[in-house]
Image 1 (cartoon, each protein chain N blue to C red):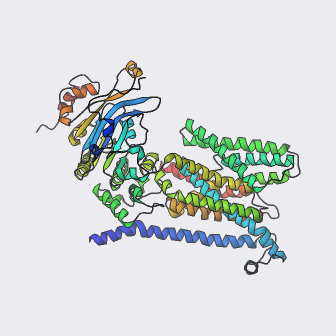
Image 2 (cartoon, one colour):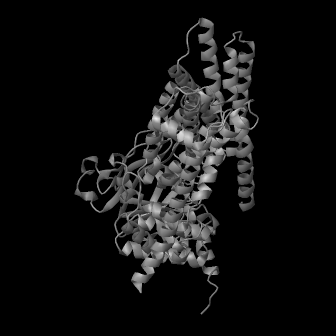
Image 3 (spheres, rainbow over the protein chains, first blue to last red):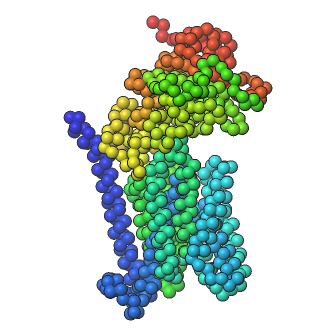
Length: 350
Length: 289
């Protein structure tokens, strides 16, 4: 009797849930593989799947198709994948930090802060005739992210209301964007055309050496974030309970800020500001897995971000080809409705 | 503001602080609680032995919560030390605090997409490894705690969709499954109806019998008198001038419920006219059999 009861209990709480996690990850992985393939196949030249497999196997980069796949589509695809994952995880970290479901690097003005500093560095270097390296871009973006984050946190000390905080973030974002636009408009250099494209947000033109840097940063960041999974779940219970469970709150908060800034800075440095991925993906993932447990949600967000950005990038470059859309305009179309839906749902419950 | 501590009775000399005197008890020694700019309560000497229920009573805003939050280690002490079985709490590393002391707070938590069982399970965190994965044994302990509080049928319910009273009991189960020798509760009866209030008192007694040392704050004097081994009376200065002169509150008396309830002391503590509480207690006795 007792044994039967215990067995049943285990079933309720464990098995059905584990099955859901497995199904969720399998679905995401299938979507990821399909999208990877689609991204390699489609474009101004359609390359059939069979040929792609052949190119990948032989490492051919001499034929026209080989060059397109290995020099243009592959790096872009990998960048979109890694950066999308990074952005989604960054959003989840911020949502945990602020205990607010609509926090995200774009909404809080962190992406725009990074954008402003990167634009300044780029213009400064171009004027001085110095070549801008990827490392400099990343550092500039990181500095910008942290600065914007600092302003948001300062505002957070004064106002306790989360909606006000988010509005502050949006305003900071607008100010930074306006200043960036101003700088871009008045900077007189032919290279500024690139800067303009970048400031709109795009995965185009990413090269292999950049992909390598992205991969290193994102993988390192993800390992660090996974190490935070346990304190994060304690933190979801509120600070005081978390402290009682042995979380060093101050150190934990600093880690959360640094890692989320690093991940979103990485995105901004290479692809410009990308909107809504950081908010929408964590929400969708939490619903998909029906849990907010960081140990599941963090890898889920990463995979979800990969899938989301690959899909959006695919649409951005193929929908009105040869004209390319900015990535943010596509992510907004898919992401913003998610946010609206979530807010309505939340209101309905409260 | 005077910062020197006035020695008072019951004070434990510092050199004994790490000695055997504190085995099996949770102590505040000369604690000053509050904030750097505003000290709320000074010269606190308290002892909670294992198996004992100690209750803080006193008027609203007298600093009971501040004192409790300091005892949990959340607020830094502004002086003195808090000892768990003779060890300075400040020196306890990470999860060790959770293994020694469990909490039930008034602050509301809003966990997303967590079942009541999940919430209870977070009490087992101090015992889990690097990634916080629960063992089957952890789950069993959490389930047992839910049975003890009689909310096992809520296990699979979404925490957000339960009533305030149910939430409070889930949080109690969470504290119980933390399996710590000391339990601190801040106004645990808030949100509970009379039935659950009494049930909570029953559970606390059961825990105390098993050897848990309990420190809580309560508004209900009748419940406090009924369940506690010791009452700690936190008194505050009544006038603004008095407050401006120094610390806001102090511990006025510590004693058994019988001692504290005798005479008109409670009226004095809460700033009421002498005899008010006694009259209230007599008038509220509506069952005449």
